[in-house]
Amino acid sequence: MPTANSLVALLPATIPFVGPERLERENGGAFKARLGANECNFGCSPDAILAMDKAAREDVWKYSDPEAWELRQALAGHIGISMDELVVGPGIDNLLGLTVRIFSDTGDPIVTSAGAYPTFNYHVAGFGRRLVTVPYRDDKEDLDALAAAAERERAKIVYLSNPDNPMGTWWSGAAIEAFIDMLPDETLLILDEAYGELAPDGVRPSIDTGRRNVLRFRTFSKAYGLAGLRVGYLFGPADLCVHYHKVRDHFGVNVMAQQAAQAALADQKWLEQVSVQFEAARKHIAAVAAANGLVPLPSATNFVTIDCGRDGDYAMRVLKELNAREVFIRKPGAPGIDRCIRVSCGLPHELDYFEATLPEALKAAE
Image 1: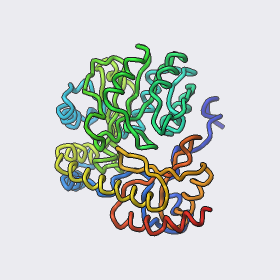
Image 2: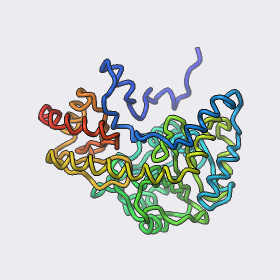
Image 3: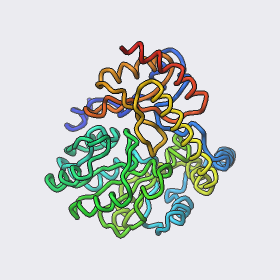
Image 4: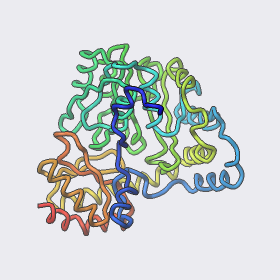
């Protein structure tokens, strides 16, 4: 009987996130408010829908363009870089795994914040690297501590999301640029900007692919509303990007995904419209939290993290009580930030239902 290699044999069979579909199967019914996965509940551009319909009728019998040429060309023009400085892949998650594989070896130290994006940690473990974590400070990723750990450990990679998941907080672009300057030249920075389209002006650093140790990651899953299609991309120096073409799944981004992403990118008016909806939803969630004696954290994302004011066990009880009332949310898990719950922006009727059920959930959690 074949056996797994020694690394894989010791890993747990798990997924970084429990999907709402699994919880619905366990609960025996659908959630009335799906407010946990940081999706775009407002949908995607009508132009993207038309592109998907056209692809479904005319193109899905074909293999996708393995170079994603037209999408890369559109993205390069949008960002203001060359096509050689950009890689498209099936979601940021896939690109994170490739990055760990390409730019580190077995046992190498990789630095991140304790409680930051779990899927990145999943890839670090899956490739047999050594995860080094630093705690959040004041509900933000601690740039000084991350830089110090990278220097101390001679880290191959540092992971930082800005704006941050799961806290929703952010650093200015100037602070990020100063952080880059603190990193050793041999340390690669993964700058995850999945929520960048929803951030205030000045949060994303200026475009500079001359930074030799920085790769920036973005997605069509959040503001653009195409989470189900799995389209992400990264950009940075061409001599770093070229390595992805040695190991990536060249047909990983399908025909429908490529065409829909290109149409979504072209429809910046839709992006402006949906950004207004996200802002209204953030205000709604924050008002609900405050009305129930909880503290909403400022957010530059498509969710609001709420401080429940006690410990992680209490916050978990609140989450479970909301789950039992057909409201799907998630929460941070690391000590220091696990006192919070995280509520994604939803449609008005979903947030109204959350508002109606939260007092009951808080009472039951006591």
